[in-house]
Length: 445
Image (cartoon, rainbow, N blue to C red; front, top):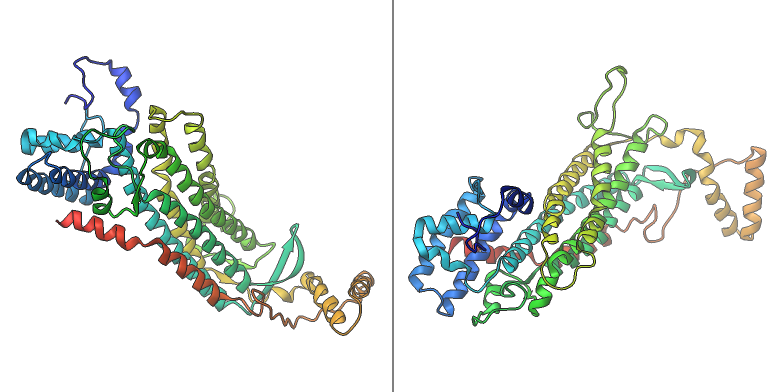
């Protein structure tokens, strides 16, 4: 099949292989979005008289057949076909003849891939947000379950002050609130319609861009057509930063869990099915799932820099450099989702050691409690500090492990309800319903 840009001359096989690269593989991620975008586009074309009503009905019917194939896993980009856009157009022309060639009027592959990326990305953001919510509720549940179990808190990896599993689980839950807030901002920037910007300079056709915006359930359009094209790469970078925030939380939590499950800490026990053994040491239960989670999430935290370095120093307008972003960006969503799902599985089943403080090595973490008790009774804080320090030095310090913290966010007042309320507001702020309803209308007709 001739390429969409064919001008009557052949390029060498080596040049074709180099320029196409992994596009066929990457475009499989975008197939569903490409069909939905085409449905909205041709519906708009019919409204301005570029295709007839009966042509629209035939094209929509055939596009729904292709959409079903995509969703069923039966869609393929054939050998020799350049990309998903060419494959969809080829399938239409096979069924409908020249009518299938009309779907490209008023758009370029530039704005076509832009809208594909945006439709794909916003759907993936929803999936990530859902997985974050599952982990959030798991952590909150564990925070409440173990809120009265004390554990050492550390600074500089030195035993510092009393903490609790309620605080530990709850801290990562609240971290996810901020991460999801960041993701919502990325969703807002993603959920704007670039269709109609064509190659970045608009079209002489009287396109109705608000119509395709509404049909696809976007919050608004990217109004300026040059900026719409400048958004290629920027959108991916913004989303990657939000994903990196979530990955950072997961990586830190995985590190804690690996460390706390080691014999020298023995604070927690990971599910047996989430550990692996040694080929020569029969006692080993290695925390491989969380070690891999840590590595994968650290890799994901490098994603914004990868995208930045690919798109950096490009002037306005389209450049083929941007194609390479797909290779690092599109697969990253599933990798992050895998890590979120593994984290939820483990944290729901993790076993907590309720007798940590029986070990006298942790007695000194109650020193601040004693300083504060003396200060409450009237002793100046600095004098109380020196007295407790002297008792520790002389071996006369006796810990009082009866903790009575009351302020907001402390051991005795976790504020989990308030944190849950914050998270619910963030979740509601996405407004995924508009996106889902619009896509379902297009799919069903």
